[in-house]
Length: 485
Image (cartoon, rainbow, N blue to C red; front, side, top):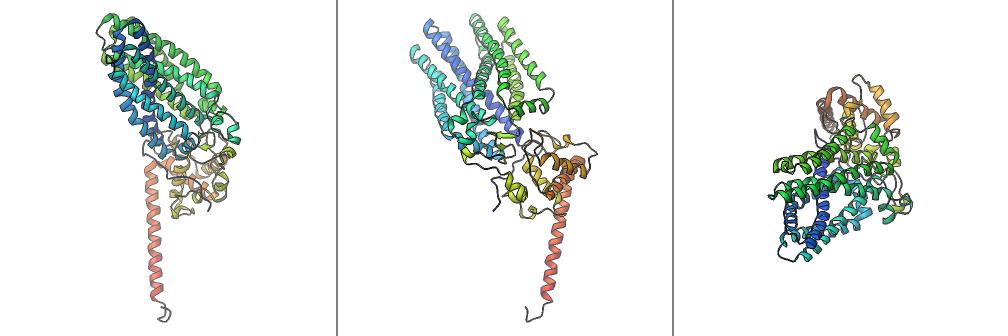
């Protein structure tokens, strides 16, 4: 049968699956990056405490570690499975591509994560119970395990943008897919920003220090750490842009909102100002102010950055071969993967999709809007919301006075051909083009409520036709001669 590996579409009304994933991922990135930066900071402070016989530094590590234990290793660990669940149902073929390529690497990351979790408990609860040298060794192991998790995950994230080497498409191979220029540049950028996060979150711990002299010392240490890492991270981001595919830059120029660059600049300026103020006047670091600035700086900084990274991959979601709408868009001989586009071009997406309802496999006047909605959900909803709100609502892209004829020309001339670099090629039969155009037109003019009404009318008409046919068949059966019966 001409079926392809697509799954039922997950769509959250008024929000969309993309925003659900983004909300969970933003918090998880905040927690995970802070934990890695703090782990390396602990290794440095433990060494300093051992060398200078400083009990106050060990006490700071304990307090920061306890905060980290609650904030990162409880709340952050909850969002980890949240990401797995949400991305698996939102992007099953994308997650499948990563697992098929890096399942053992992910298993390795989990081993380091277990060491990390055990390490943070040991750091917190063994202060004063073991000698400083032993505690320093625990801190170093904790820091190395945390950094190892970062290295592995960044390699996988880089593959989502671009496989490490072009040879991966023809030869496959773990090393070809994992290691590339983009991988190491992104690692450097993320390491810089993770120290920024560590310094910002550390302000909450510094706010609780009673000794003015020690509070001033730690405010300056974390202030300088934050300033230097923020500047390095900003420079690394510019370098990172030189390692991404050309269509990623095209997306940045054309699809990111106008406020993206100003918002990034504002966050950078605000972050640097925050560190300078806390260095010059550490007494302003009180719990409420430090907590509020942590939320403002990190969420305001992470949201546009994560949005940009997710958007820049378009039209792909993983490995430059799985489209954002889950269709496999190119052959990958090295992984024995074949493009699904020829099958869709042959039979259409409605027949190729294994979860298309039977009554929608053939487009007709009685299911036009329903078929168009199913196609839009399959092809478009991972990146566009069909409702008035959510991520990139569809109605924003068409003028109010657009006609069915013009909509069909757009769908056939642009979407089915892949002429837009940052949108997938979406093959459709002529009947499917007509159905999708009718749906987009109705959604554009009357909104989602008009679509619901139209679908109800189609369903009612289909039910009436079915009832009439059943009644006609019954009458015909009753009128048959007795011997035929």
